[in-house]
Every structure is written in C-alpha cells, then in structure tokens.
Image (cartoon, rainbow, N blue to C red; front, side, top):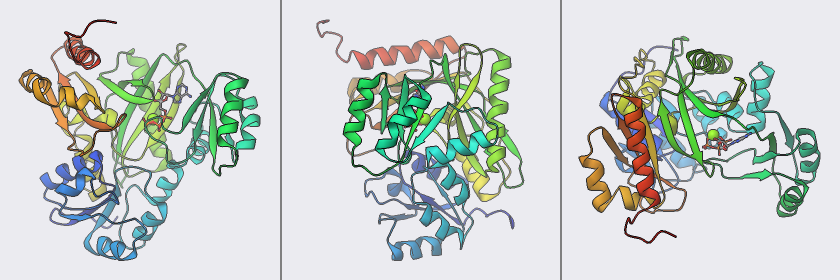
Length: 390
Ligand code: ATP
Ligand code: MG
C-alpha cells in the first residue's frame, strides 16, 4: 500500500443496497466523496451518493466514468461480477482484493479454501450438474441442504433434503439446468454465532464481540450481543474467525458465520467479505461502526476501537413488517421508546422477505434489550391486538 487515501478523495462502491448506503453515510462523515454503481435504479445508496451510476455492470462507458472518478474501490456484497472488480484492480486498489471475492462468491471454492487451511466447515460435496446430486447426497447423508454455489443470499436457492423422496423431487426440478450446487450436512446446531473481523493492509486487526443470530426461514431475524455463551467458547469462536481472515490475508471488514454444536465444536458456515446484517448493532452500540471500519480499512486509515458500549438486540424489519413498525402507530411507538434505534432503508417497494429496515434495542442489562426485542417481534406477529385469535 502506498499510503492512505485521504479524505476529500472519492471512494467507489459496487452495489447500492442498504449496506452501501450505510457505508456512504460513514464515508461522508469522514469527508470522502462516494461513487455508487448499481444496475438497479431504486438502489437506496444511489440517492445519497455524490456520483450515482445506475448502469449495468457490463456497460463499458459506465466503467470508464466510475474508475476515472475513484481512488479506491470496495463492494457492499459479494455477488458483483469478479470481472468488473478485476478490471478496476488494474487501475485502482480494490479492497478486499478480487482474488478474495472470487474465492468467497462461490460456496464450493470458499469451503474448499477453508478446509484446505484447516478451518472446520460443515461436511460438504459439490455437484456440477443435477445428475451428480444423488452421488453428493449419498456421500453426505440425510438430512442435508442443497445450496446453489453462487448468487445465493438470505437462504435463497437452498433446499432441505430429508429423504430420497425430497431428493427425487429436487432432481426433477433441477433437471436440465446448468450450474453448480453444494450439498451440506444439515447440522443440529445449538446456536448460530458470528464475528466481525476488520483487517488493515499492514495486518493490524480488530475483532468485534461474538454475537448470536436467530434466523427464520433462512433469513436473519434477530441478533443479540453479547452472545450468551461461556467465555471460553466466545474466545475460541473469535480466534477461529480471526484465523479465517488471516488465511485470506483480507483487507476490509469480514463477517464469519459459525455454528456452535451441543458438544462445543464450532463450524464455519460462511464468510462475507463486507459488513454484515448481524453487525448492524455496531452503528448504535459500539465506539466505531462496521461501516466506518470498512472506510478506514479500505482507505488505509488507522482502524477504530471496537468497544461495545451497551448490550444490544437487533431485530430486522422484513417485508410487510415495515408497514407495521415503520409507519403509523408502530413508528410513533418505536420513536418514543427509550433505547430503541430505528433504521429504515427507504426502499420503494415492499416485497416478502425483503429487508426494509431494522431496530436496535439498547439497554443497561442484556435481558431488558431482549425483552424489548421480543415485544416487537410479538407485535409484528399480531399486528392487530383486536383480531380474534385463531
Ligand atoms: P445469508 O445471506 O443470510 O448469509 P445465505 O443464503 O448465504 O444466507 P447460509 O448462511 O448458507 O445462506 O444459510 C442461511 C441459514 O440457513 C443459516 O444462517 C442457517 O440458519 C441455515 N443453515 C445453513 N446451512 C446449514 C447447515 N448446514 N445446517 C443447518 N442449518 C443451516
Ligand atoms: Mg449466511
């Protein structure tokens, strides 16, 4: 690295979803200008970028404008084309590097890399066409999960297979399709955990506290920090997460998702080369947020403190939740509530399963934050208290 990218320079971000928007806000606060490139004209970060570019990633003139305006580039999610990131890298630094994007955006490449480095991952097999699924499932055993190797997120492109019948059904469904699938053993984990790791070009590193994640239908619903696990497990999990980012020699913010088994074993589920939904609590509960750390790491500034200032529980507002909690009485109630921090992403259309916002509850005692989050979850389940119970 030649030296820091100074405030006043323009940072380029591939992808303009809520993660890109939160990155933009953090970068602006540190005096940077931001170029956001996202093919979707409704991407939230485009409305707040200095240079919004809503063109397909294949557009050569958009590439010229983008690369000509920026001093460094990053991305807000891993499903951007590696070819674009590689082309950018020939002219400006890209952090995390394209070689990392390439490894992490394919589940098979990612798991192969991690296991070759001695990182415990869920037992898996790859199937390079639907016909190979039967063999992969036979090697892994039931119950298992079949996941598309690329482009999956929020549990999309995943099938749970519990018996031969469900496998036959999936084979019929996928017949003739081209692609790659990873078959993974279904783990009866005790908890899902994650750790944010920030790493600078010179190798300086910060690890955020261990958090506990609760998913519903494959989508993250709630994150609780600190995680309720014994201190030894927490340390083991953080050390493992740190070693994953060291193995990658990554520069930027990484989230390492883990499964904790009832016998205390830990498995890495997956690694994201960017800030993560389970790290949104850092915006309100930590000295320096995951987005500011991304700015710092990408621009070569000193990394910030990761101290947790308060226990916190984050609840995602998914799909129609936003009409209940982010509007009308629900909105007023959340805004009045001490310790509740509401974030709405300003997405124009509400779709089932779409992340529309989140709320972070802060409290002196973890139980109080948990209770507040549970109350919100309950209210979201029963939007109208006068509705007759089934
Ligand atoms: P995200 O975008 O939320 O990170 P994703 O689509 O990349 O999700 P995964 O993280 O692989 O997919 O899986 C989503 C969720 O499905 C996990 O958080 C976990 O709850 C469950 N899951 C995934 N793999 C397994 C497994 N091998 N055994 C048990 N549950 C699993
Ligand atoms: Mg995941």
